[in-house]
Image (cartoon, rainbow, N blue to C red; front, side, top):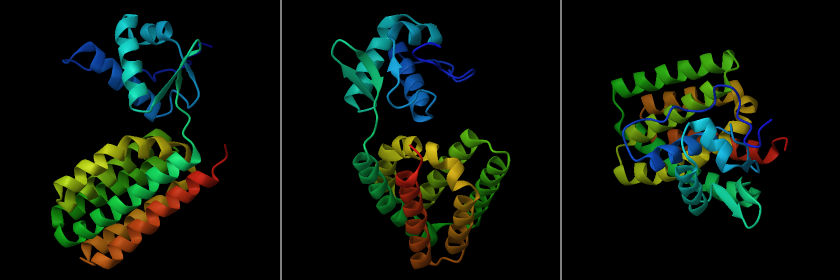
Length: 224
């Protein structure tokens, strides 16, 4: 197996237009976020370049940027490795996520209209189908879309910008526990929709806080 060892079909297409280095960066970040590239995995420039169909230069530039952002560790005389988050790093990020999303849920309960509620119900149904099919990648993607929709319904641009800064790392931490959270996560989503539809701001806040706390605890209790 290659050091970079990517699952079949895991390599994303390099979207155009845009500078090649940016497209390579996005492709590698997606592979890391979805854990197609696992924490601690050795990243060999030549192998990544071969997978992506590019030269080594944009891969090198992308790895340097990912290192600056904390996704990749560059070790002298060893090379690049996917960062292995500590329990403390994960805890801090997921705690901040709870604060942001609980407020988003409260605002969504205050502001959401019928169309927004319907959109949440449709996203929830898609997520439930992904869980039933044991489609972990699909469930993770739908979970991200569901939470993004709640954030959109909140109607606070500053809150949404802050949430966007942690969204990719939330997906990174959620992926290894998605199967364990399974159907229960979507039951909690249904409870949240009910609170938002009822315009019950305290209940929506409580449900979202409990929901995100369950994910945080499950991450810490996961099999390593």
